[in-house]
Amino acid sequence: MNTTEDTRLTTADFAKAAPEREARERSTPAMGGQDEPLAPLFLPQLAHDFRAHWNEVQIGFVDDPMQSVRKADELVAQVMHNLAQTFADERAMVENQMEQADTEHLRVALRRYRSFFERLLSL
Image (cartoon, rainbow, N blue to C red; front, side, top):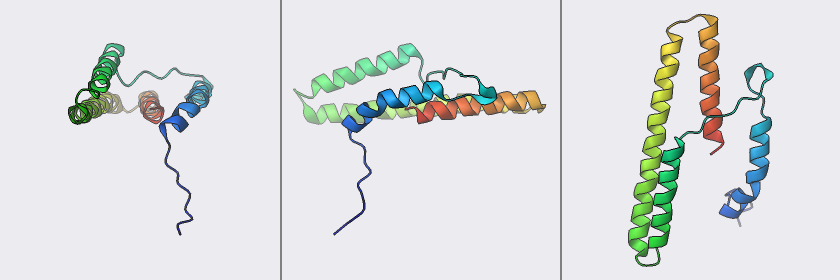
């Protein structure tokens, strides 16, 4: 008999924890003790387009479940590719700042990494 507790989150668990997580994110102090809004990982229009495409995939499940799952796989792959590109772009910007290696530029670079890190954890 396996006595290890199952730690997988269900969709309901995730939804139930959302208000708590959002409150924690709003109250997390930024470097220097000030609250800093986190920029979204996706541009608003792109996020809207991804959601609209997801709705189409979900609606299509009724008529063709197999095709719907294939399209869902493709859409998730597109989102992950976009996220990887966002990270690559963010990293390039930070690396450009690091080349000007005074303490202020390094502080800004660290803040940019922190912001990106926090955005990833808020997914």
